[in-house]
Length: 307
Image (cartoon, rainbow, N blue to C red):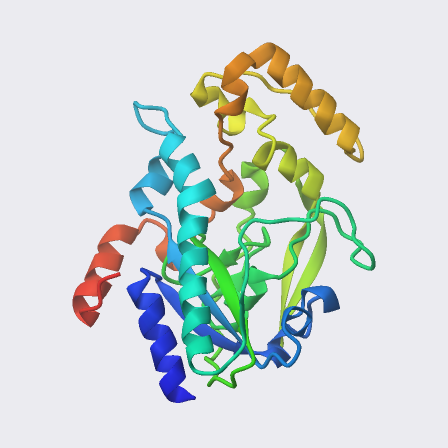
């Protein structure tokens, strides 16, 4: 099995992944049964978590330079990186199948908008890639509910492969805390989707992470439907903000807001992007004031392993 794991690491590296790690199923003790690895693959034994960093200068500079553009960030965040991740997951699934093991690669950024059967939350994925990333040792979950890694902070994207192969697990991250509760993420969200008074917990193996309670509909009002111009659409030339209603947001509210945005914004309505400023504002303590690109380049030079 160690030989298979080495092949998986090689395949992930060849596919330009910055992260690859293995988590056993007992670290998924806090996820809903329909999002559990065994819900995707009966007889599952391991989850391989892979991830890749964003182009760092693109991430930091999107909308902040003279170009005032989110176009590259939109294209790579919405299309290129998810496709690259899923292609890499497909490569790993094929390696596992070539060695006689079942494998299910997991999608990126797919949701059930409404509660489903006994899943009582809205905007839920069918698998918790963020839990898999933490379970595989890549980092921790911050107050905003997003994975923070010691290498790149929040500046990466993850997916997973569920398999019935018994693979040697990687240790969970055990270094200095990556979230020091600075709460900058709360102030960065102009939708006020993160509650500063209520919290939830995410359990991953033996660890419990406290996160701010998130109004997912309020988050998606900007992230998915781009209805707050200040979060990015303004820099596309669409200075149209539709304020959400007080209280719970419904399908009808979104439909009406999108129709109004279309009337006021015209064709530009379809070509905008909203930055997740709660994530960009987040920098773990040891990376504050640090040139991430220089640190990464030195690490690559030291290990001799370019990605």
